[in-house]
Image (cartoon, one colour):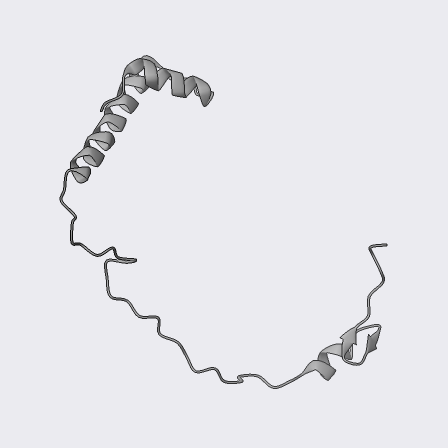
Length: 95
């Protein structure tokens, strides 16, 4: 399958792209080469090949889940205008 110049112009018009004749020819060449590559890949026999999520065997290195900072809530809330039971009190903005 390959595209024609008229099809590229039609898609360009739908996308509201103003293409010159030279740009249309260049885009047509690129699109046809991409379609040709896809056609080649579709001809490859992939029976018996298991699908992969990623071509490399990667592992996610996780760090241990440990507390790294101390609780400083009282220090932070000391500057707040209104606090109750460890919560910041703010004016109601939605009624």
